[in-house]
Length: 119
Image (cartoon, rainbow, N blue to C red):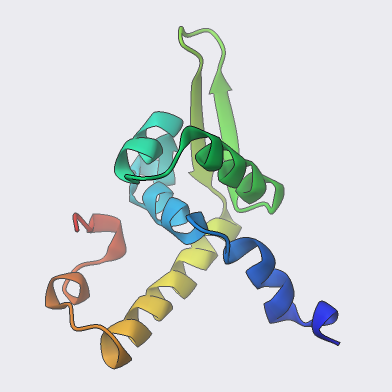
């Protein structure tokens, strides 16, 4: 049955638009952490509503931890990759290597670690 397939269950949340890109943006942050506004600025086209929903889903899946500084105005929300989230970054890097080998010629991307990517 497809409903018990591990790949099918995983793709249900990781296959949603923006999920992997949000994880990569958090990976690029110092201490694998970024503020909500930083992630939004670095992902042109994502709405605040979608980003908020995706971050909540990533938090529910245990890939991201949310930290709130309520003593600041405005309130600061920071998101940090968990060990599970960092493990997923390795899978994303494997996808990148597959794409560079079979689908996309992008020497600039191939020469950079995703953590240091400025593309």
